[in-house]
Length: 422
View (cartoon, rainbow, N blue to C red):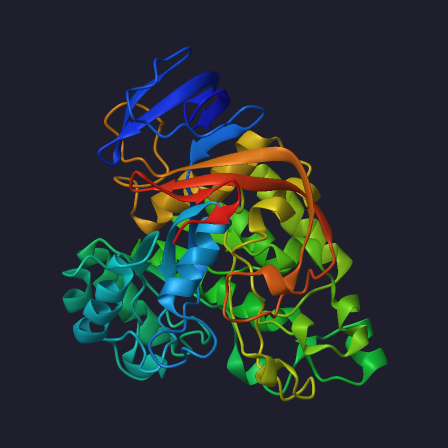
């Protein structure tokens, strides 16, 4: 990779990067190109550790009409990701060693690293703990019932105590089901105006409050998925100030879109947690800037066209995210590129337990998981050009700044000049 500016956890410097045998072999200016080497132009670009997504729905097994591990991984590579964490709300759920092994085997053929998140409870039903130890023995480091929050506080306490002994992290989809029941968008002025039943911010905030209390009680780490309200973020900020081992992520749609977008009644804008009001969007941006939120996670949630063409209250929630997250962050957040890359690369790698392979400094001997980003590139989102099997992006036609030029995963150039190689 010739002529770029390296940005990694150690800082910024102009440097060429040489990769061979799946690892970085040299970093410096004016390096000789080894005989027979493929040279990737990085002039005017940033060379960074590959991005890591904490929250990807790959749909396989069970809903391959929406996405497969192969197609989701390709979309990830085009977005600069060299690792994704596959969420367990598949069919069947990833709640046993057998299903973990199945997804891991499929992931070995993918063009990026596929880490597997296991379910906290059997079938993600919230009634009985899943065999966390058996899944952890296969390398699972993150557990969640994502799509559902664990409603039973006593069960969640037991899960945290068990997870703490295993050295793994529980991630919570914060939603009080009784309070959120029947809601299809954020409860506020726009839900009243549109006549669509809403979910109050408190449905998220009550579970954030409870799990902060359980974190304090057990001492076990808790990761909060896709936080969306000012109240949730304020509580996480306070918990961190108190020294509790909590981390949090935010999705791009929660810092780029508001509930006003639902005025078109287009289900492409239906997501869970729902798009919130302008004050919440401002709070997410502030939390990303001040360190309250540790990571930007896509919550990439593909759905086939026929599902998203149903009436708003019948359509499933979810949006695509892998190919647009970096550009949205660069375009919409008033943050230096170093901070954006920290939120998308090395900080999520730490939370996911992937620091050995992902997000580390670009130096000789490290695994070659890298992306080359042109921060000045202008482009327009075209759903038809997506590598995903689905097309449910809310950003169709939106002009963005910043695009991935090359992605190198495990030493292989899987994206070159913006084109997927496999």
